[in-house]
Length: 227
Image (cartoon, rainbow, N blue to C red):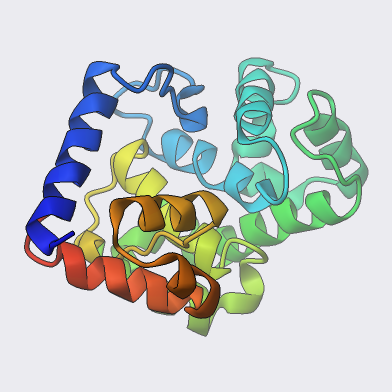
């Protein structure tokens, strides 16, 4: 299969996704509050903090728990960076575990509070963090993954960081530039699809690293899928 054939097949799949031809395609992150246009910080916090707890768990249940936590006035304050940063860990634990947003009663609470503290103490708001990066994905990557990596547990990991960047630019409505550098980590499903589409062979699926598979996709799509 040549490059143009693969591209055409990808476009056919995208069209099927958009018109419902693939069946139920609701993404987990679509479970979110209806934010007003001026609720920029609330929107960004909602799509940031839960991402750091999205490890080896059902994403649909994670975001359902996030929505329930946000909609409950008794627990909503965990999404405030200033309040989460200063909150007594026991109180934070009670709020984060009420709807099972946090599943690990110690580690998840530490992660949530660490990230809240890092952002609040350094930039005060998520919007200020994005401004510090000039709304540039590449600058944001340097800040999160290099300069302040220790302050962003799990969120700074390559898979989640890239996915979070996509989420805040799509659902969080942040106008990130250089979005074409956002990587999608090839998991088992992507690798299988890569074989079926002819991007890699079955033999390469066993031998190539995930970064090499990502590079194969990047080379294939170069110039074909501008944002």
